[in-house]
Every structure is written in structure tokens, then in C-alpha cells.
Image 1 (cartoon, helix red, strand yellow):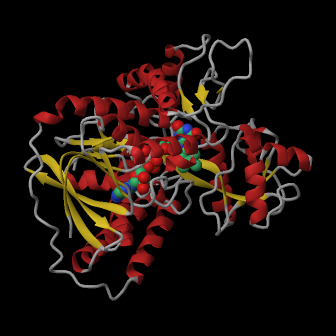
Image 2: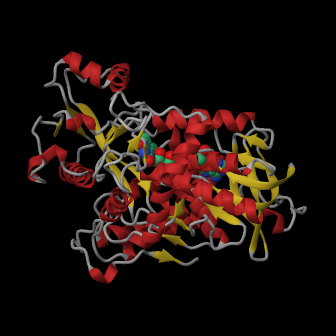
Image 3: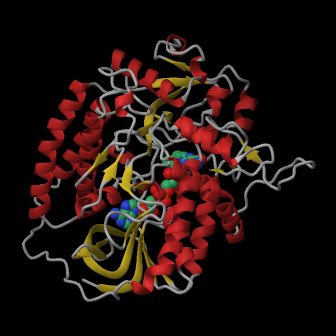
Length: 524
Ligand SMILES: Cc1cc2nc3c(=O)[nH]c(=O)nc-3n(C[C@H](O)[C@H](O)[C@H](O)COP(=O)(O)OP(=O)(O)OC[C@H]3O[C@@H](n4cnc5c(N)ncnc54)[C@H](O)[C@@H]3O)c2cc1C
């Protein structure tokens, strides 16, 4: 079991972790640990882009107002203003790193970038790199991190828990997949940049790593967690066992794609006058309703009325992906389900990413800054990663040398555990948890469903804790333990909110209530 000493430990290599590490590295020794490869997080898969006010006809005030509106009365106005005002600076920093945003082709344009417009935004303000912005950002930042002499990378390393000295954080225990051992990292401060928790649901657009580890780790260490009831669901994710997280862009519905039941009939017109063009949450709810009503595993997204060459030209990636799975979208509907997409809640932080524990920071999707309120506006999440990574790095750069130097910490004690003889317990509980979260705490909730989920999570948490204390750790067990904590936090927040607002929809309280116009904050 190794013992490492660094100034700063950054946990996670998405937009938040990479950009924070790079802005800290000039005079600081950094360990950047990540549980799979460097590019394994949600960042790599982001398609649309990053929101920032760039155009002359746009304004900071307009971006602020759009974000407030999307957040359904629960946004923190200070966090919004801070984010929106710092957006341009972050875009410049990304450009300086080498990110190549798509350029404007308009000779009269006053700015070099092409801007798109997305749901909720009153103006064109989304900077993008074609339809693979996350990949472009991830590739560039990863290349910078790899070449930096002050950043040591630890891939296939999985954070288990923080180490505290009194009330301050001074390191973490990290599972090393290569050796199967648990290493100790002793540092002046720790930054959680571990992304969201969408893997708590059966269907998700997120990659495997999004198991809410940072939220569970911070909660166990004594941090407050907020607004976990607000999970954003994307309406159309491919339903196929060989492609569990593949997102089908909303542009398909924009180009006339119809949602159909297995008998070929359409249904969106019964839910909203805009039919397929209704907002994400309405479409997701309608699909969920039909799936539950008919007991069907998916519905179908059908754009086959368009000529084949139109489809191949407009959706080349998707067309190729579907063909590789034996689905020809020029001739038939594609099986789709809604899928958990974004975690609006998380570890409570201030504008510098500081948590309730001294020398512990949280940035990116793991954090609750108050920016998103009850619903995230498209392309504000990557922006949040960059803005808070910057403010967090600036704060640490100023204060680091006043924080006590790392000391030797006790090694992980594995003397009381043995090898598991029943691995099936882990796989069974993993699947049970994601199923009941989907069925009872998903897109449409009721008091009865939430009560059922509460009962089940209590049993599961006890069983998982017993297993955790008795057997040697595996990555699956570490993630399952975290998923059970996150599921419990979501259920508790959902039970506390006795109204429907933003992404939280409860049939027993279908209306928004002024009595609940505040975030749900859980104390550990
Ligand atoms: C398909 C898709 C499309 C999207 N499109 C957009 C978009 O166009 N615009 C936009 O603004 N947002 C978009 N989002 C959301 C956005 O991508 C994410 O919110 C953002 O990338 C999160 O960045 P992050 O750095 O916080 O986390 P991530 O990028 O998820 O990175 C988390 C990192 O932490 C690591 N990690 C997790 N747990 C541990 C642990 N225990 N130990 C060690 N390492 C750990 C992971 O391996 C990973 O490296 C999209 C999301 C998805 C899934």
C-alpha cells in the first residue's frame, strides 16, 4: 500500500478537474486521480457546447434572466451573476489552451465564433466544436495535463473516502485498480470533481463513471447536500443492450421525427399542443406515462418520412451507429427511452467551490452552487465547470501556503476483512437499486412510490454496509455503496418537496407552491 504526498489532490478528470488542475499547477505539486481513463467522464460526450454571451445583440442580463426562468424560482441569483459574468474569460482561457471552437462563416460577423441557440436561451450564445464540443475540450485539456511537469496522473484510481484531521480535510484513501490495494494520499487540500450521479437510474445518457461518488464521499465526511430531487431526464436515449448510453439529439424531433407506440400510433399530441416539439421534461414525462400505462420497454422515434439522403447528411453519426446495431433509421423507428441526464443537486459550495469542510472543495456537476435551481438550462453546465474551476484555483493559489503541510497519515486497515464468497450480492443489489429508482423515483413520482423506495433503500443500505464492513473492497462494491447513499439523498429530498416544480413532478402535489420556493438542503 503506497503513501503519497502532494500539495493538492484533484479527484476527477472531466472539464472541472482538468481545468482546475491546469490553473493550479504553476507553483503547486498536484495529484490528479481518475477512476478510469482520463476521458471517461460526461465531459467527453457533451455535444451541444458552452454558453457565453458573445454577440453584440445579446446581453449578460438576458443570459441571467433565461437561467432564472429555467430554474423555476430556485436559482441563487448571486451564483448566476457570477457564472454569467465570468463566462467570456473562461472561453478565452479555453481558446488559449488550444480549443478550436467552430468559426463563423459570416463575413459580417463581429465575432470569430459560430454561435448556436438552444432551448431556453433567448439568443444565440452557445460556442461549440461541431457536434462534439466535449471531445474537443477533453482532448485539449488532457494533452495539456499530460505534458505538465507539476501534475502527476493516476488513472484507474478510485477515491473511497476522505481523511480528516479534526475539522479539516488532509487527504484521501484511494483504491488502485492495478494492484487491488488502497493507497493513502496526504495533501494540503482536496478537490472533488467527480461529476454527477445519473448512474443511480436504470437508463442514463451518462458514462459508467457517473455514480455520484463525490456526493456520497462529501456527505459521509460531513458536508451538506442540496436539491437532489432535481434530476434532469433526456427524453430520447437509444434503447439497445449494446449501446446503453447513446443519446438521440433533439434535432431529430426538430426535423419532424415522430414518437410512436409499438402499434405505430403517435401520442405526443395528447400531452401538449406542440406535440414532439414540447420541452424536454414534458416529452420525457409523456414517454414515461405511455411506457408505464402499456407496460412496454420503449417507444419509437421515427424520422423515416424524410428522404434517406437527408437523414444520412443531417445525422451521419447516429445513422452509422444505428446501422452498426442493425437498425436502419431511413426505414424504421428507433427504439428509445428517456434517460437520466444531469444531476442538478450536489455538495453545497460557495462561489470559490469551498464546502462545509475546511480545505475540501467541490466543483462541476458534483457541486450545488445554486446556478441551476430546479432545472438546468442547456449548455450552462460546462460553463459552470470552467467558471468554478477557475475561482477555486484562484482561491487555492492565494491560500495554499497558509495550510499546514501534508503529514504521514494512517494506512488503510484491511486486517478485519476477508474475500467475498457471494459476489452476487453486489450485482443483485446494484441492479435492484437502479430498477426501483427508475420505477419509483424517476420522471413521475407519487407519495406511494417514494415511500416504497424509502423502504427499499433502507434495507439495501443496511445490507450493503454489512457487506462493506466484512469483505475486501472491489470497485463495484465501492460504487454500489456510493449509489445507495445518493439514492437515499434523492429520495429524502423528493419526499421533502411537497409540490411539483422544475424537474421534480409528484402526481400527489401537481402544482407549484410558494411555500416551497427554497432549495432542499440536507444536513449530515
Ligand atoms: C451525453 C451528454 C451530453 C451533454 N451535453 C452537454 C452540452 O452540450 N453542454 C453542457 O454544458 N453540458 C452537457 N452535458 C453535461 C456536461 O457534460 C457535464 O455536466 C459536465 O461535463 C460535467 O463535468 P465534470 O468535470 O463535473 O464531470 P465529468 O466530466 O463527468 O468527470 C468526472 C470525473 O470524475 C471521475 N470520477 C468519478 N468518481 C471518481 C472516484 N470515486 N475516484 C476517482 N475519479 C472519479 C470520472 O472518472 C471522471 O473523470 C452533457 C452530458 C452528457 C452525458
